[in-house]
Picture 1 (cartoon, rainbow, N blue to C red):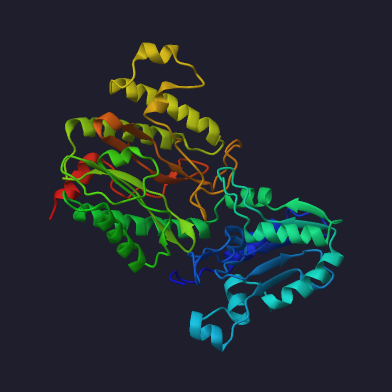
Picture 2 (cartoon, rainbow, N blue to C red):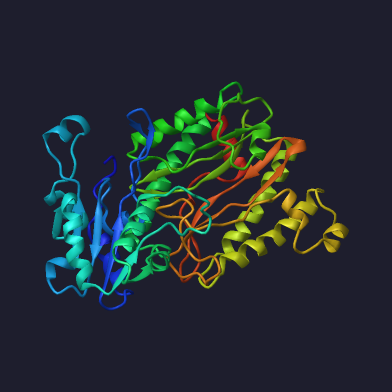
Length: 430
């Protein structure tokens, strides 16, 4: 892997916390993501199932994890199954984990080859009364693809229909939404690499460069600093493209007088950063651009100060909308009288600020977590207000990553330039 080895204590603690919440006489089974065929004999870029990585640190396909704390034999209580490697695989695909390496990565003593999984499963299911299975239950997901975990769940329930089946997702959501210090350190590393990429761009962007050239600069900086790559498809949006929330074409030329919205960040060890900055292509904001920029920045700073333990994310997003109303009135985009008369279910600010301000962040960019529950210390969220004025070719979003603590929130991106004047100074310095 490009990233440095992670201390296996992280995964051991994660497993310990998971099994504490299992019912007696239960087995939990986690399966890796499938390789997905792209065309001919090529596959899409593969990424590990986040639940399995969270519990094992194994970044390899054809992997299974079994947790059975009440198993009659000690060697059945934690079993990791990894793909059997041989000389043919080493020649064509490179090194795969052997049993000793898999044990070192995960902290699991009992490691078997994946081809032994079906036989072991029959023994384990005979002893268990309850079964926990993992599936993607992120409430933002609209995926209809039948993934490996769904196929496995269907086959298992068909073969063993009389067991009691339970969802791992609620447990994983409660655990993954609270980051340990190990995880915060990994996310800070992703933020640090992201900062390097952004600072590089401040010296590179000028009228005439193409959006895809900017993307290439980021890719270079991320990878040379051991990032896995981009945390998500980078948004390099100049001019009116900045008003398209999920613009990823990145194929236009940057022009003098335009703004450039950069929503791009690094992934390190499967943990993600999520940054947005909006900079002037020619190094100087116009008066109107700076007015709008500073309005967004004021909302961002006020929203960030609200991100405390006990906050409910759903309510927070609504409250920030009310703060934004005041700024939009000040920019003469909304009128006070119209706001007073608006339908509360269809607030007028949505025309210029159509998205929420924060989401959970972690192994997934839009990480799992309960947006209707009170936040606990250890949660990491984005803070990302924006204003989009298509008729003025202005789209501005500012985003940092915030760690919820028992006191003041910690901004994991506090060192990344954010003030308009600082951005201008860096863009114009030699």
